Image (tube, rainbow, N blue to C red; front, side):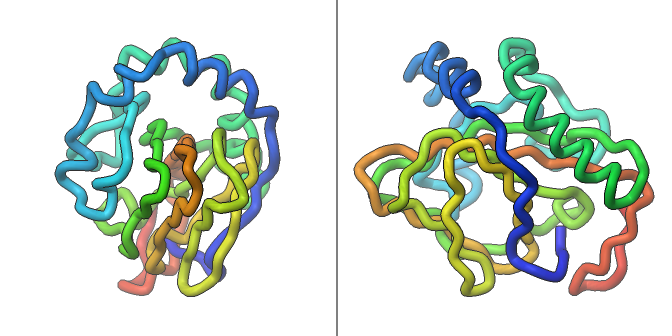
Length: 194
């Protein structure tokens, strides 16, 4: 979703319960779903664990994957912070349309790109950092930001953005896409309605 800055800080939660939940599923879980990194060139150095996700980019009625049940309680603090942020902004209830765990390999990057498609123009994209360090940089429209563990940031994914992991450790984020039905969004391609 487009807005008037590259990043918006939402708040901080305790990341430890989520980090422990991710560790408990083990390494093989990161290799079960490979479609996202195979189809989308900028994400070729990532691994994805879908929780609420559909490859068709749908905007309603998302598919909950089996692991969503395992993560729902530890995701709730982040989900509630996002709900509250959007209630205060527009005063309407919304829904999550996508939630994925994503891991960026050590010493690699996500190439510069802009997100497109019907739902991406109309949903808020939030990143919750779980495992990271000061050598991981998120860049949007030439502005660089480090997301510390437990921080929730909304990103302007309609601007060109990229990630650099200059460390020897994997970076793990939760990406949560949230829709506020009826919200009017001034996109560069013209006004859109969620």
